[in-house]
Every structure is written in structure tokens, then in C-alpha cells.
Length: 262
Image (cartoon, rainbow, N blue to C red; front, side, top):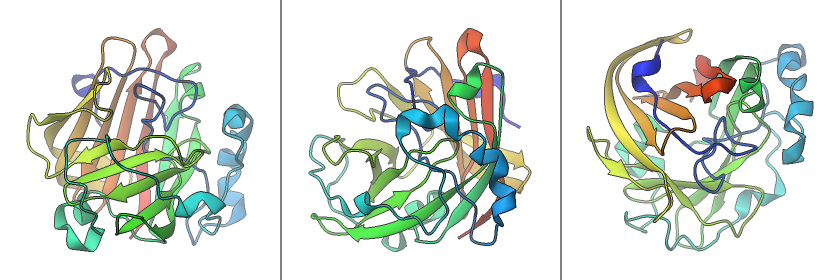
């Protein structure tokens, strides 16, 4: 289990994918729902959290709920320093390994949170699913992905050396740089050009979560003052395996991978 040595600071917003960075665009994803083999009864703890996510205007949904906004294809200019040439995960081995984007793939997480911190990441079991794929105007595809611990969805768009993302609630929101590839120790980038936050890659030798022990992973740390902390760990051939958040005096929360299917 990862702990305080990996914490980095971020700006906290009212709804996030756990936490938001800068203009509330950070969250790695968000809609609740069972994996393809889950029964409705298994999602009861996620359903209980819907009331705390009222600001998103969405209900918890399963993998089959793709949403009408999956095909949005807005201008990606100004979203980072990487190449704007689009690509698919199959064309980028590093991307396919660390953050698989294939329709039907899902990851189930167990969320624990201190009282108070649960407003940022709702406790229970949540399933994050790649729900839909649609053409992007610059080529390649935009993927609609549900989240780790709230009911907001996110769009992901892969270029040759980046994964960009934005909330699915608006097709006018600028794209932010979620991952800058390939990962290199100490490499820093701005998710929003000119914004207050930066992300940094840090190697992690091994991570143990309920889904197993994974080696040669990468932690995406966040630097942005002293308001809160959120670190995300990605492992080869799996994807996101662990999130740790520290919301200062409010408390902490974490997401641990329980199971997945690519």
C-alpha cells in the first residue's frame, strides 16, 4: 500500500475524479457501474453514494450506458506540449500498457475514505469502464470512460505521446494532459498550460493491492501548493491500480484495484 512518501499537492474542486486539478478538470474518470460479470446486488454500495454526487447530474450506470456525448470531438489545440498526431492504443505500446483504452475493458476499485474526505471520493466499490469509442476530428478515437469513485464521465484522446482528457459534461472544455509518454523518472509536465499544477513521473518498484502485486510501475505525482495531495499509480499491462488522496485536515481516501478485465 502506498502512503505519505508519495503524496503531492493539488487544488481541490467540488467534484472530481477523486480530486480536481486547476479548473476542476483533473479527475481520472468517473461513473459508477458494475463490470460485465457483476450482478446488480454487488453495486448496492456504489448506489448508496449517488446522493453525494448530485452535482454531476448522472446516476450510477453499468458498462452498457455509453451516453450521447461519447462522440464529441473538439479542438485539442493548447492542451499541451506533445504531438497532436492522433493514435490508437494499439499503435503506442507504452500507452497500451500503462493506460489501456479498449471498449469493454473495466477495472473495479474499493474506495475507503475518512469522514469528510468521502465528499471527494465516495466509499464503496466502483467499476471504471471504457464505455464507448467515437472518431475524433483529427483522426484516431475519443474514448468515453467512467470513473473511479463518482458519477462523472470523462473523454480520453490519445496522441502519439500523450493521453488527453476532459469532462464529458461539456464539449467546449479544453483538453488537459493526463499522461505524458513515455514515462521517465523526474519528468514534469503541465496538465493545463500555464496552470498552477504540474504532474511528475516517479518510478515505483512494486505495488500490492487486492488484485495482486505489480512490478515496474509509475506514480504520477501532483505538485500544486499545500491544499491537498493525490497520487496515481499505473502498472504495465494493467492500468491504474492505486490512488491515494490527502485532503489536509479533512482526511484521506484511497482507491485500490480489486479486479480488472482488458
